[in-house]
Length: 465
Ligand code: DUC
Ligand code: ZN
Ligand code: ZN
Image (cartoon, rainbow, N blue to C red; front, side):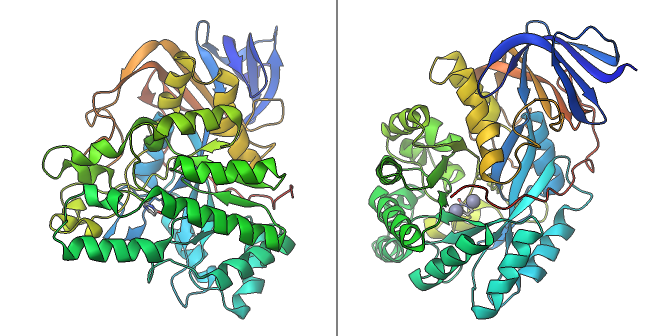
């Protein structure tokens, strides 16, 4: 019986090994790996190319209403961008509105994604309200495969939770096998700084960064770690941006605490200086936490190498600069930086930006697989189904040409955003082919899939303490 798909002679990279070999797929799963003599119904020549497990982006916001607009990428455009960028699974954020049940919120997000997503998708649940009666519902979500919950220490009046709510949620995840994903910034302090800046007429985009100091992130990170320690449960920090916050994570891990953190490409490749681009261009980079001063990124790179940081996700949260077809854009904040919708596109650029770091010797190719695929799979209940290419795993495969350069541009990206934060940046490497569960999604850089291909990922509860 020939294999459904045979990928021949590529450099296969996992979190632990690099070797030249073949990979066979049957029924959407990896069937064999190594030197394979049998034939395949479809054979792909991967000689001179790199064969990787599909990327897992554990932090996207598709079709999300926020700050007076809805993100311009819905599940179709967002997931198409993901696939072209070598990401085959995402974990997106469903939002519980105040007073709403988790059940209702989850049904809403299922409706947004169902039949419209090219990549496999799971959901985290954003918690804004956690009264007694929601606690059992949280357990039910974990049973349904929604085993992670985002809480905010920022955005007072919208998303921010107080310490009581945070501590209660942490305690509940100790028992139900969920994990809290924390947005750590001291929202109360930031709010005062914003009001003060606006009152003083400081309204330009750079004030977004100047009113969200690194210490506000470090303080919240420290506090959340203390709360998790008292609750006796692991915690995961999303979009960690500040070197000082990372030091808190590092110190906690050195004490043996189960503390984990992701950073994002924007904090590795861009800086606070980008807010000072001419005119209103700095608004492109208004996101929270903000871009940090030059020099901070080198601390994050060291943290990625040392395993102070375990994951790179994107926080893809795209808004147009100008009003889009049906949505207001960042221009909402033209006269007041605090009204600029927070977020930027990222899902399509992550894999190549980080592969470029492999080419430049900043991280090894095995570390690349760990931080883009294996670790998010392990931390978010997708392993061993995803995150590696051993027999039995989903055949989510990226074939990358390490010698063909790629230049990021609005002209070639697939996000609906009207700008590319990395416009004109050239990296060494390009995505040639992408397979999801054995099905071709991109071949030779061209679309070959279906936008309805993605399936809901029922994730397992936390298996670590
Ligand atoms: N940060 C952003 O920049 N956008 C969405 C939410 C968040 O935490
Ligand atoms: Zn956040
Ligand atoms: Zn986010």
